[in-house]
Length: 149
Image (cartoon, rainbow, N blue to C red):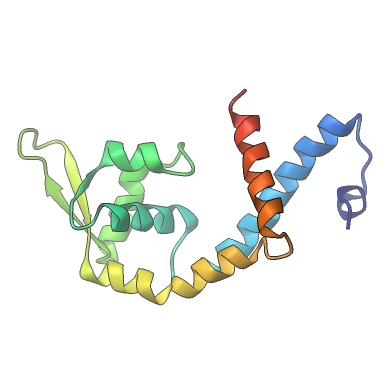
């Protein structure tokens, strides 16, 4: 169904339509992903941090490194890490040279949770299953081009 019918609206031009379509599609995908994660007691930014830490494992990551790699750069990484710490999914260690710096490491429990959540990653891929590989590649190229402005 076209965006005009989805939101019952008209657009100034194709550029306006494309921007609204991007926002709307992002919200639809985000909502689906939020529902998947909710079943595991995680919010999207928490899942994002856990995936970053899994990629760093067995090494720890600084709060700054995590913030650089976050999908939502406005996230309060320290608060997200605190919540994950309370759930025993990460551990925090003081920096050796600067005790104010916290290094974060995913725990065994965090790794096990991500292993259980592998089904979410498959469902995440399935969100675009109505596109073929060529279309997905083109979509990625177009989205990259938009951000490279």
